[in-house]
Amino acid sequence: MANLNSTITLIGTRLAKIGNEFIFYGPTPDCGDCKLKNTCNNLEPGNKYKITGVRNGQVHACAVHDTGVYAVEVIPAPTTALVESKMVFNGSKKNRPDA
Image: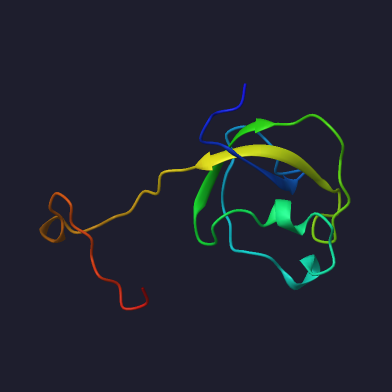
């Protein structure tokens, strides 16, 4: 059964394994004319995701993944970071110069 917080997206058949985590970096130029680009690129760029389910259905052709893509269910994955203890307090959020 699908998690209520999960999102359906497409990922390469070799990567489509429950428990795998990945960071979505956004679409590539090869995605331009693909009819499935809205399903593949429905995640937030820069965020980390965990695969919670693989839909055993049709393999879809893909210009990026040589063996095609499967539909998978993903949820946002926690990100682990190393921060100096003197910079941390409840509710803190360090300002990044690139943000």
